[in-house]
Image (cartoon, rainbow, N blue to C red):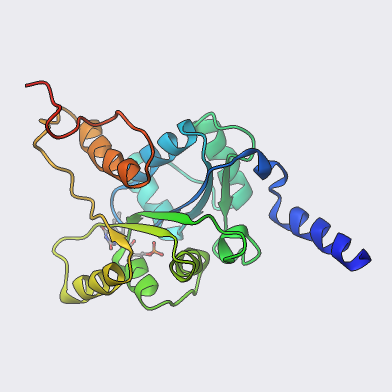
Length: 225
Ligand SMILES: Cc1cc2nc3c(=O)[nH]c(=O)nc-3n(C[C@H](O)[C@H](O)[C@H](O)COP(=O)(O)O)c2cc1C
């Protein structure tokens, strides 16, 4: 009995997510070093607005891309990054929690605690390859492996052009086991007027797949002519 009590105290302290019980909807968002940081930021904003608790995993290459593409300097320390993103998106306390690449005791690392849904947006071809092979060599790869083994919903948003045969084979093998491959390929049939419209096209489609109500992109057949 004593042992059990100690364990429960330890796990709460290690993960530092005391208030997480307040959020009924949880999702893992991994951001890797492919081009398209703006998609990740907009998706995070929408998930916060939809009252999700978001466990954010960000590779070091993703931080370089953030800086290059949108001038955002995401702190490398997970707690500082959590604070930074919480402030940026006016999120509730503990609504956005960033985990480091070797935080093996975080909820996303185990099928017993991980959210059943995970998005990798954008997804580098490197992370795509690692996930397709079940490498689990960092927390992003491990979290994806957990969602696959638990038969949850995993959505990857790869960006590269052209795709090599290796990339295509990796995507095929993941698709065959139920992973959704949604390449960052915004359409133009809704006559986008700005880059934000293109970003919202992709994020709107992602939210559709996550079953999250959205009105950020017009739907096919319902557009004002
Ligand atoms: C500005 C910038 C843009 C990049 N764009 C892409 C890209 O679109 N697709 C891709 O697969 N890799 C891209 N890379 C390369 C990846 O960041 C690199 O392969 C890295 O090792 C991926 O690591 P990660 O999967 O841990 O994030 C880019 C790198 C930089 C610095």
